[in-house]
Length: 299
Image (tube, rainbow, N blue to C red; front, side, top):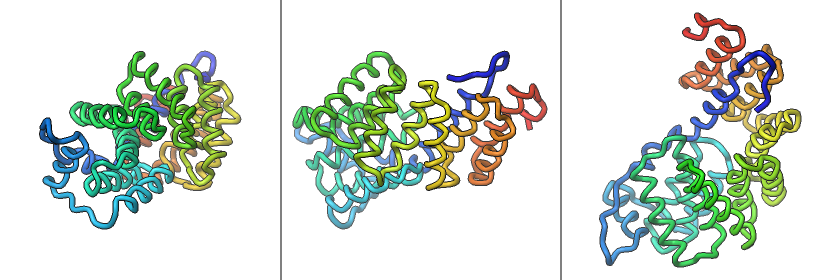
């Protein structure tokens, strides 16, 4: 990450704050029920039965819920990730054998799980993905969803398997969603390659907002701060109060020594999310680590 000589900047903290936002609003739908084990019931059928037992009463068609779920994911907002998860749950409750609903649920679960996913839920996601991939091992959307589930539990082995799954999804013609999974999988080991995958995803699906921020994160990790800032500003032009984008912009500006500009960005974030502790925490870290102002940080 870019740093200023002689100072420890709140770059990691701001980035972590941005990552934490994905869990907002998702608790209700992630935690609905645990499927009962049965040799005669598929994992998808078990999940659907558990969700229905917990009170889920889907209306409409599975196809419509899948389309609505994809649209919600493309909005790239924490509350829409929770909405997407609900739509894919409803699609699976209506048609447990529908693999595109499984793929969508895996992607939405990973997007809404945050940095500390529930262990039981993560194990059920693994089980569902394993079952679906046994039925369709070369299906691109399932491979992309599986890659994201692997990345939800950090570790060298998971990262390697996620990269292989995402690359295979792209090879099988997975389009923008597979390219986004590849961008995520490459971020730690090959940020320049991650940025390229995000750029290809944006070209493939200009209406999807996720590649903008994914590309910005990758470019910054690759040391291309100016290009990263341009992507962030494009994202903020669409959603001015996007917490993840504001956190990343603040981190980039702070790392470049533009402290006043970083403070202004954090003030925008506080105004956009007055009930969230994340922007206040980021502002305190900036005060403590850049100015050495511990009393201000404690406030």
